[in-house]
Length: 286
Image (cartoon, rainbow, N blue to C red):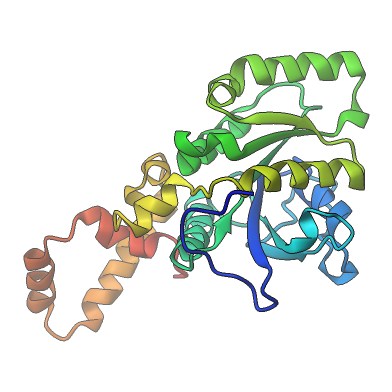
């Protein structure tokens, strides 16, 4: 078995920790998928049946598989993430939440084994929301890491097999095509422990060969970019409320500075781009 080619941090019980984010739009079935794998009832996620998001923030869920000859040697941590259509947070806040977590994992030399991206196959069309989620995910991930992506289709029991196959063919032949050509894979999630487990087994088998990272991790840590300067950050559309909040925060900061002229001089000398000055305040509480 090949060893990862970079230093790694192990958990306190000496088992190598491998992290697997679970991503996708609101309603894609992330919580349902996770609940099939969670051994501790207290860690099970609430499952929504409406349009509101159930995942608020990120949830790290540790798993162990003592009866599996391969997985028993590792600590698997799944990370439940909100979609970019979240009803509780705006897109800028969601990107910052996920990107900050990924950057910290990169600094801590955590092993990112792969990522599971779920999509509701029963949706009648590939909506603008689905497209936005996929685009942001692709930009965060980067082409080099697509071999570790598993696209999972969910909610097959809600539709006929024929309709599901047509939807699956469209996803694979159109929307996911370029990513699949670069190494991503697809699997059906069939609402069972065995099906969810097969996703984990698939990812871990590949993770032990070579460690990979999201592009946004390298952008933020190695290239010292702020989130708004990363590829996904550049795609964000700021609302009127975002802009008003940024202006309010900047005015508050200037008023709190005893010497406003000195405040402006510092920024001039540092040549801090306006993007950097504003981004700090986009997702903070007013």
